[in-house]
Length: 477
Image (tube, rainbow, N blue to C red):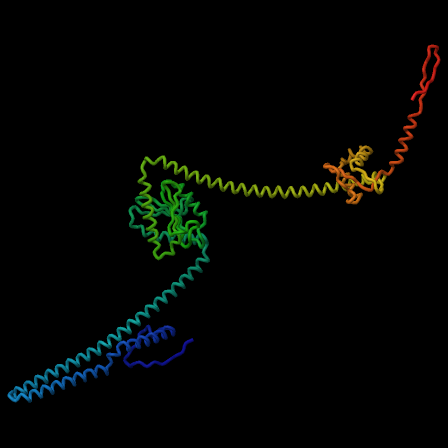
């Protein structure tokens, strides 16, 4: 918001158009600046104020009058001097005094004019100073508005359009080489593997790739320009120019260099448009390339072997880098494979464990009926798991063969039939001594065995044939 004030100025004064068309903010600034400037000028030239000037003139006039009176007194005392001579002298003195008075008045007028001019000059200087400040501020505001409009326009542009803008900007900067011998620029961005531009000079040629990124130029772009330069063996230098950002790994200085062999070098130029004069940076890069080119040209033929060794070293370094990359990828794949195998192993182990448990549980029914018939609980008795298994194996050979029963399955079954505190391991193979159990039909078997032994012990008769044809019987045991 603004408010109106009434200012009175002389009738014959005309205000400049700049003041009449000024904004409220500009108007208040002009008033404040003018007021401050006027105060300063008045203070500076206060010693030359009108009153003091008149006062000074009056004092000088009084001094002159005193001198004149003194002279008149002297003249009166000179009685010998004639009356005409006295009048003449008096008139001369009057004329001199009038001349002095006229000169003092002229000086006073000049002094007033000089003071007025000095004050006006000081006011004009201050006004010019603040007009300049206002102009600079307006330029800054216009620049901010232009940047904002460009930002809005750039945000709506495609990546290709931004790339074209970057190439156009670089193309404009290359005008700085127009006076160089043999200079020519050729647009190559439509041809793959050739960069954006080729700069031709009398001494050497340059392959250029211009980037208009919002973030750092990545490693992939460095690898790309390296491949492009190697394809063009006749070109000695390649420039990777980042217009608005830095280049990854090569951002320690505005311009950095990387030799890829003994004759070809990549020049990295960071944030070109950040500098006040981008063309100057390009010229510096060119002159540096010129010196490097001279150094490579001065190499004698006696260093061919060293050159070959260096080229071999570059190639070996590249191969080592590729091998390291392959090894890292191989290690990654091996780790992934190991993890997959470990996961499969765990799942297979779980499946086998489940199947084993199911097989063991399915075998329990085959053991259960035999156990009930042959084993009973009896305190202070004990049996060995191996003996029980052997007994079962002798009695159930067909079942063992058909269902693939083993001693381990049988021991698992025993653990389900007796308390765990009744088991005591007695051998490394896993045989158990089982407390408080015994054979159920052990006594009957012993009695049966004794009866069989008695029957077998009865004498048998033997028939013997004699010479007479008679048969004789005899007993034998």
